[in-house]
Length: 134
Picture (cartoon, rainbow, N blue to C red):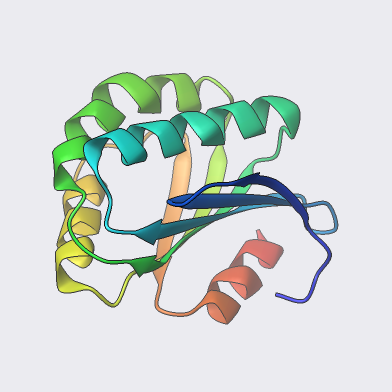
């Protein structure tokens, strides 16, 4: 991704960049997720969307090591309804090479996710190419 982007949030567990050229957020999750870091990162996404109201997100999990399934119920019950009120989203989800993280992703996607189109990718370039087309 050589396009210009603005670093909005940079923490140990998440980096969020706003890409003005493509009008999307690039969310890079990092490390072994805890329930607390997952919740805080999701809240960071909402705060960033309030400042940069885009409808396309690259959710990059390539740097995630481990399961985050303990946070799925909170995401579905608490965070997702607030996220969905912001509009219809296209999300290019770049999956982690970690099997535990991939299992958490599948558990997440087994829930009904209204107002959102999510496609899962193995590499960032293909994910970005798809998001540019929608």
